[in-house]
Amino acid sequence: MDRRQKKTRSAIFRALITLLSKKDYDRITVGDIIQLADVGRATFYAHFETKESLLKALCEELFAHIFEAEAGSNSAHTHIFDCDAPDSVFLHLFRHLQKNDNSILDLLSSRNNGLFLGYFRENLKKLAESQLHLFSHRKAEALPEAYWVDHIAATFVQTLRWWLENGRQESPEQIATYFFLAV
Image (cartoon, rainbow, N blue to C red; front, side):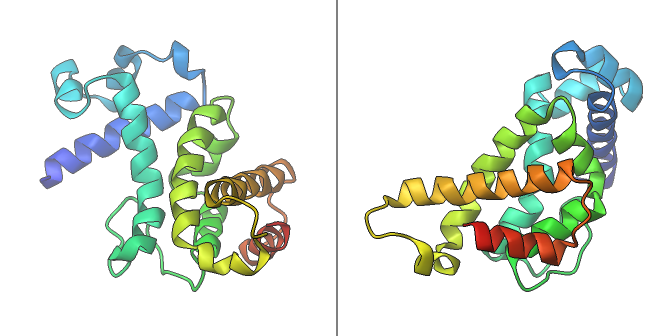
């Protein structure tokens, strides 16, 4: 993707994020997005087939940085986040959330958060699968792995919700500790 395409894609993402902070996803139109992004309808459709594909791409872009970094490409963060990679991928994630990179906390705590938490949780399940060694000492033998992975992802989401609802008073390091203690 060339620089012009990246700028256009970024403008469309920013427009959607801004609109989501103001109104329900279902009430946002492609017209609203292109007006705020200052792009033409054909340009929008050259990048995204539908508003739903835009939402999916936004979530993938927001979360791919962290989830792909753990999969082995963490030498260069090429997504829309800027960071230094800390020692724990879960701490890494909490640090991004604390910085509120790309208004991600606004999205996760907005009235549209169900959409984002759904995508987020699916990616968290993949992340948990790659990090099972961190939790193996806590898993009861009788638990199926799929259940255990879902439990880890659900615990992370619940920890995140609690942190958001309580004003993010804890540091990323402290909230990551709570998460590990809760699993």
